[in-house]
Image (cartoon, rainbow, N blue to C red; front, side, top):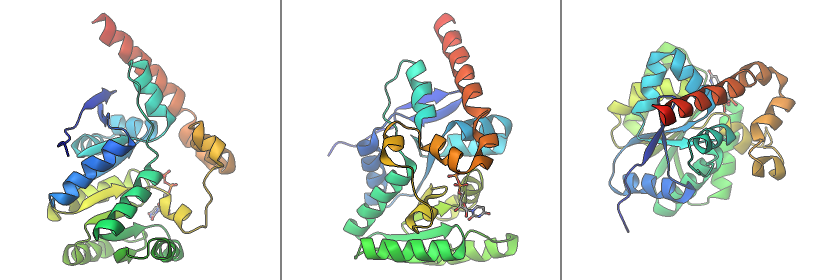
Length: 250
Ligand code: UDP
């Protein structure tokens, strides 16, 4: 099979990979087969605006080995730049990665969410993927001392893929702290995915997912998200339009 190379596009200074779902998975599989580690970021407009205001987070985003566009916001931004890009929902990508790990016998770890949530998510995954080897399960509520213990445990156990569900930017900051110490582990931040896999939170109905409006559905269900999402998305798109005009003119 051909050896895939990254093809990146910058959105407001942040790299986004132009793989589709299938090739992004293949690119990840390449790393697995070559026993290489990597950090996968599933990027959205909120993370980009956070990265613009926080240099550390911004550097982490651009230091990731794979950045997949998660949600309609990034898809639209790329469209404004004249690029047709498939949306890759992070939660579905993570699920496919789990399925690949089951098939190829790679060990995985789950770190994040509340204790009962992560335990239930692990149980459900073990039922769904009978040959899956989950070697590490830990909730996402820890202080700095516990964090050091977690890092030692992870280095000893070395899961091939670690799913980190602490929400952004926490999960990316955690991954950046540990990735150099675990050079053959693949890390992916998966936000609220464990809540869904545990069965305790439902995803949006399919029609909302198909329209790329899962974020809107979640916001309507959980109005506290309003403050986070609503000023961000229109502002983000306006900035992208201004950037695209500058690129055309200049
Ligand atoms: N979480 C955690 N530790 C924390 C804060 C959050 O494990 O200190 C978990 C939380 O329980 C939830 C996930 O991180 O499972 C964040 O989900 P959210 O939907 O807010 O993330 P998003 O997908 O919006 O980034």
